[in-house]
Image (cartoon, rainbow, N blue to C red; front, side):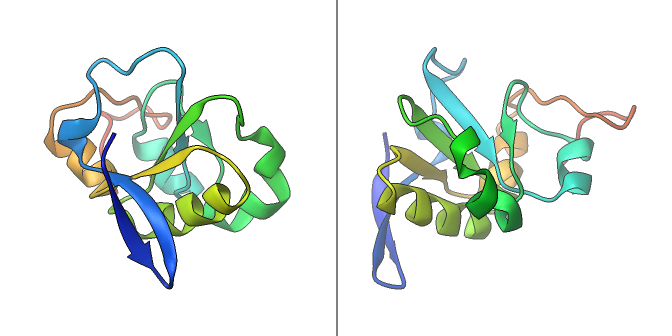
Amino acid sequence: MGRVATVIGVNIPTVAITGVPDPLPEGLVVLDVREDDEWRAGHVEGAVHIPLGDLGERVAEVPTDQQVLVVCKVGGRSARATGWLAQRGVEAVNLDGGMLEWEGAGRPMVSEDGEAPRVV
């Protein structure tokens, strides 16, 4: 799935939304590293939510036996998280364009704030 980008000397496995199967396959975990307000507004159903700033202390919550698709709003935070996770042996892949691309492709989302799912 995808290509490899280099950020600050670290190779970041990256995939475009067109390379992400729809529906998501069994065994693929979506890790959302956005902040709480972004998560509440709209996210991938079933995703694991760990804000980037909390990832270091909550890394044990990230599955190590499955591929992990890491998302944020546009791909910057998730690229950093993907590189960090990959250095720790996690099979992580960054979603290029993030949740904006996910939403733009018409992929399903859910919200936690009582409003229609959206990316903020």
